[in-house]
Length: 242
Image 1 (cartoon, rainbow, N blue to C red):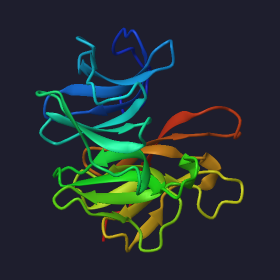
Image 2 (image 1 turned 30 degrees about the vertical axis):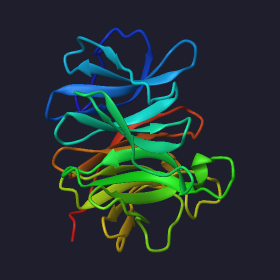
Image 3 (image 1 turned 180 degrees about the vertical axis):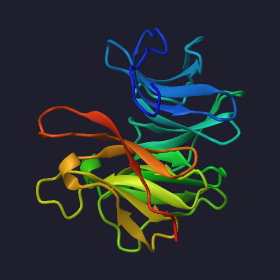
Image 4 (image 1 turned 135 degrees about the horizontal axis):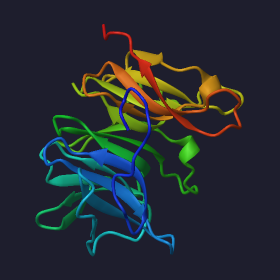
């Protein structure tokens, strides 16, 4: 649908349920999580005109793979493998899969590759032998140059579903921090974690933020009106970065 609103139209007829789509500006393809009738999850890719849907298979991927994020070259994807709870890189041309995080150290959620391809922001939590609970994640940064992982914030707080701004200077994410009802809002943080702003009101229970190409707006899932009326797509303007 148009960003200004209007009637949505179906992009493609698919053999799986589709969620968490991610566009590649380089190769005009859309990667998404495809969920089969049997409940397995894998990465699918479809052309931007809705044609040629295909599943991305590899021996090193489980049947529970989620949240594809394109590298800027359009030739690789970062994904979360739910069996191992690690971030993996898929080299599409060579069909090679590489683990980027250590399960013994971190249990991971959704990844997002930075526009320059040098960082991955992801949701995760230290592995202390506990069962994975995505509501207890906070946002981490993985330096793809040296492999060092650190929290985005100096004093980490709950956060998940991170996405990079187009210029790579900020990260948007969802968090229910400081909300007694457990509702979520969209936050934006500078990459160094020093300045963090809450962008939406908790009454919207907002999540899954996505940046506009010019970095001036965020689209997100929100509850409008009554909290029980279901989710809608909303857009919010952003204050200019300082």
